[in-house]
Image (cartoon, rainbow, N blue to C red; front, side):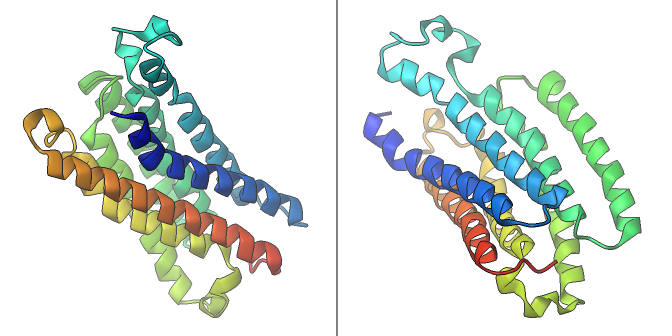
Length: 239
């Protein structure tokens, strides 16, 4: 990988993530009544930014010819997949808790809280016992996608039955929902099959498809977040 490749594919995503986090903080400062769901969302975006920044260490090590972070050379920490695994665990839980705040069906909410517990335990098993702390677990990615899509579908279903549908331009959860829904729907299949189709196996086209899809999907999702923060900061948020 050349340094220009890193700038083209990683830097734009880092920029939109950081921008969404900054706009999220600004959004909280402009609110008179801050809901815990809003705090959770912004804290989660801060977690994403932290993971992205921390994940730069192997890039810095590689392009500095291991003048920096030399202690990771030829170790299992030479890559940053282990950091991404934390994201795969936290992301479905954080996103689900955010939308459960807006879902009114108490039976569904109780069921989903139990489901999140099952997801966490199952994911810990598959990620850290069945596969490896340093490898991608397609099972965790797939389960996380189903969890997120499940809570989003219930959110959309309830939204259609309320008058909120007339005020979507100032309803922040809708922006978050659209971004998350598109991102998970598009990227999950590529993430699942990514371990089976890679450059070492001669699947260059699939790898490039995966890279470009992740790039565009990330930019779209965090742009939706940023747009939501901007639009809802200008207008009185619709509860």
